[in-house]
Length: 197
Image (cartoon, rainbow, N blue to C red; front, side, top):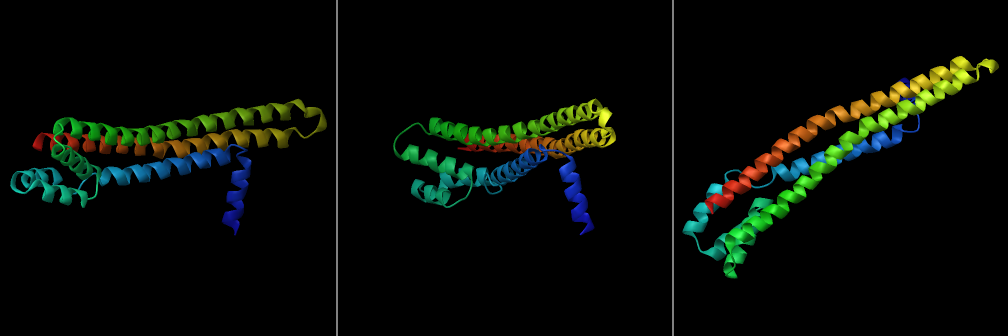
């Protein structure tokens, strides 16, 4: 019970921007986990080599059905390509078109994570400015004898909002870097699959 009381006091001392910073934190983690799931499930391991062997050895309809039953964007791109091939369209263009769309969609999700990560310390800084305004307001009412309470409240708000904004942003920076590496790996897998096909 004491822990909840302390957390509530800490939260209220941070000022009105604590809720938006918390919402940014939830957004960062939601998009990070969702994008990570998509990037890790681009295709089953060694899919590129297996699909190249299947295309060389099995009928096109069998390979197409196998790709449709395989999860991931890479299998979907191969299915799209083989379907284009059946329609007598250029398979290379079809693969690249699907690849661009898939990688672009994943890249947009990464941009959202980066933007939210950048917003967290800015909201903390805005809370700092609000806290400093409250501090100066406390100094200005010195004649009433309430200066200490207003000054300490303003300083508390300034520091807690900044601390919370940074605490949200720092993990977001590491998450964005990791997601960027996973996106590069997904691009590499698409390129490898394209060259095998």
